[in-house]
Image (cartoon, rainbow, N blue to C red; front, side, top):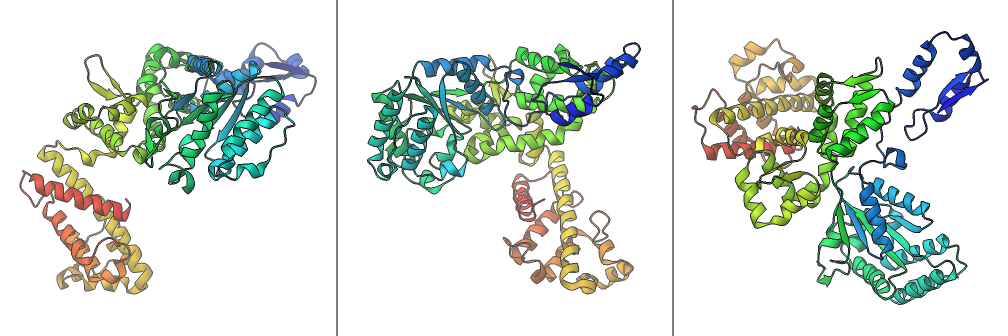
Length: 557
């Protein structure tokens, strides 16, 4: 929007009112005086560059609340509304930041346009998961009463016992009939927070609240399917996929259509980045759109974040075409932030689907035998990974990761889990992990001795050394002799120091005793590159890996 005003301070006022919120309209303000004084196009080009092109339309970390920024999933929104109109229940599942809540908002906007009703419950809130099943029914009926502007008096006392199921049905029918007859959609966001085993409150997690709550909702629905439908939204589909909980039938098993959020196609990626990018003076050609699709696996949030990063890096002249060189450099610079998003997204998978997560790692590390075995024996594992948009299956039956950048992330994060290694690879891994351990032990030793023994810390080090070594190292300070990268101490000297002063270090190695620590350190030292033959025994290597994992977990490095 272009705004022309007689106020000479109009630009500052617009900036103060709107700020840099990408969710608000873009306004280009001009004052009468600056237009009168301007010559040529410089004023207009400068304004566009500063106020129009500078606005970051990709920078959305929260769910999208307006259709202007919503791309790619309109068909899903339409399908969800159609199912509601047909009195069918629905559910949406996907990893974190996959766009679930944005879809819910889009459904609600469309219902608003059609003057249809909905109730939205955020199950992550203690005000929801902290309620017992009967009081959650009361909360729903109270929200429905308010939504319908009903004057019905609700007897809250009748929601304190098992009779609340009957009372809920009676109240719902009375409110429904009190005004315009219309179905309501009840949305349960973060449904896993009130689902057995994953719930945030004990009565939902290990009690029967889930069973009793859904028995009530389903019973009322089966008798009066014109009253409401429900939509379940979350990261974990156990609420609708598991047939039993605590030896009880799951009341909503096989009764709700399940929708996993699909990845964006190339065309959808192209539409989104160029629709928003063009407004910012950024043009992404087909080749770059393909790379965005492959690197991010069609994940809209990740695509937006990378495009936002590119926008911030290229703060010069606009408009500009994003070329391959600029894109590759941006991806390289953005890698650490991208990996943080992967940590967040995959945390759910690692917590609730550990077997599927390990299978994903196997695929990334090229362990085809392990992956193919489980794909054949337990196909549900692979099914989850496909539905979450993490892997894809080719027409020839081969599986691969859907995100190239995720493939690199998993390889880097799990490089010490790879099974098929040459002797040279084994030696490199041992050397790398040994050096990391040695550096960490130096840092810890310096801090512990300084805190516990102060100036006498250096004496403790010399006491653990042979006389000849003391003479060689006598000019060193505590900090220099235990410098993380320049320490003159040998690996075994470091081991002897810690063993000798074990009373000072035992709290650091709380899961190890002194004898076990010494054995592990000697084993690691025995397989150092200059101490063993070219061939590394498989059993020895596996044992050393366990030692390293123990140290890395204990010392957190």
